[in-house]
Length: 263
Image 1 (tube, rainbow, N blue to C red):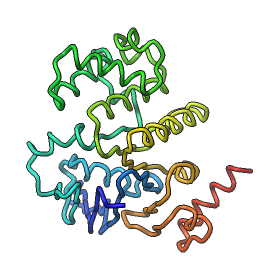
Image 2 (image 1 turned 135 degrees about the vertical axis):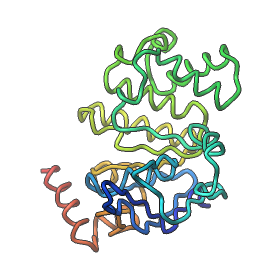
Image 3 (image 1 turned 90 degrees about the vertical axis):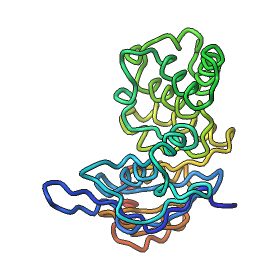
Image 4 (image 1 turned 120 degrees about the horizontal axis):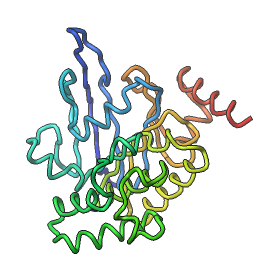
């Protein structure tokens, strides 16, 4: 397989009140086309900063201080903001942890999906609306033609996450970044969303970066993983190999937590 994404020596720091916090420090990894790749670590390990760096959404007091992010042959760190606007949502999409704060409460979910389709795909309003209904059907929302006129508060947490997936995939991106999208959901709904994501990835031949603190999800979804601790990669490799033979004490503690949960 060929690489869709190659991150080389990425460093992103934050400077609150004159301090320097190395949120991501010299991180390198690659993602193949059609792969689900895992980024694992506890809160504050730098996982989300990597995602936001790829999207070029790091703002003061944060700063990307070095590295290269090669996406489909383009270094994202060298593109203008105007060029990145054409990539965000169209070629790279992201799903965040909290679906309620990611959706605008004053617009219907249909209006929000249609806006992205019109912006990136140049369809007229009628065509975009039909595609938005199709996307809701794809993420298994029943009675999509009627539900598309509902507002975010009229959906459950799990349904809102499905809406966000529909919105993220509506413009047929090559890469989806999923930043802990099931953390706020109960275990049953979490399993449904993960199953849906796996099905969509297969159907669309999508490349996915899945970010989580949960080794169980990584084991269920991903073939390869990097483990982050305080902004640095402390372990990387195929998931089965990392679980069966962890080289780092931090990784071993995460695996031990997984074993405890199984009992």
